[in-house]
Length: 416
Ligand code: SAJ
Image 1 (tube, rainbow, N blue to C red):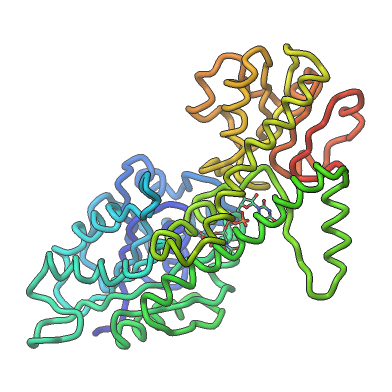
Image 2: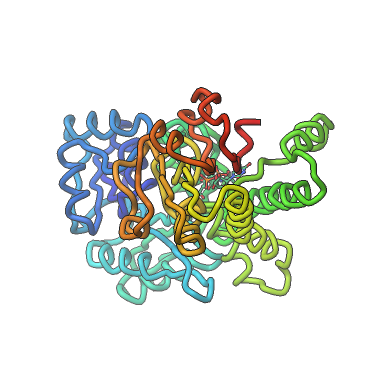
């Protein structure tokens, strides 16, 4: 195939847009594709439709240089990168409909020789499914040159960047690349080498898929251990934060931090793809998921105990809605579900939410009576109970004396 000069990145979300921008700032012609016209328009103005440190500089710069443009229609290109969502279905299997829709968009543009990379987190076998799906749409092409048909090269390269550090980790993290054929693997390696300063490890597509899932399941299992310790510690009357700090002095122990539950669109989702691929063999992974999913209900029980002390009409300040510190991403956030459930379980309590990273409540909360968004000072001043849900810097840095006389439920251990 020819050198890759033009890349279409399909899906301009938290991963696709940074990837498009980094390719564009490294000299490639990049066309971003998204179904959301508003986002496409914003990007073409050089704006970023969500918060991610340093991304705006890359997008504004590459748009003004003309190396990054956005559109709703997939163009012809030398390489296509699919960065679309893979949510789970109600039965916890992966919903591949966004991948298939992206494939339908690009299939008519193929002439042979292109590279198609799936970046979306996917269960084992999805890259092969994508490849077969493309050939089903374009039987005049092949995956390996069989019958002298022009080749479409298909590979998986899972994204592994941490929200909040995306522009750094895109460049510095190692990458895993696994193609349907060795040639596809090699072509994908060449593309990522354009901007990736980490090592690029080569494997097959299914192993690359599993590597990503396993990384997130590893973290989920370890957070579940910390969350379990927090519940055990409460029961036996000790401080879990001190406990973990002390245990972590051991040279081979590194326990993670308990919290109100695990949020985000990765760690709370990906382990289920392993469970659905091998249900009988993945009992620990499933249990960890269930332990983390059960943590918000435990936090709510702690608030109910506090309300018993204060009275049924207590005012609760809920600090933080994001799924983790210093970002504005509310997806799968345990904090959002805790606030919602508090409103259902404690209808007489006013819940004053302070979330410095959003200007309005998300839809699931905005319609609730007795739940309101306030600035941090007002929420805490008016509260009888202060429920800390996210360890944002603003909360860590606040003057602790404002908590005097209030009942504090600190799910992240920042005020101990
Ligand atoms: N959390 C805890 N305790 C901890 C660490 C995290 O309760 O000690 C919670 C966070 O508050 C949050 C959730 O877990 O609700 C997930 O946060 P995270 O920072 O661990 O991870 P994500 O979801 O932001 O990003 C993960 C990363 N995966 C790993 O670190 C193995 C990232 O590298 C992946 O690219 C990303 O998932 C993804 O897209 O899959």
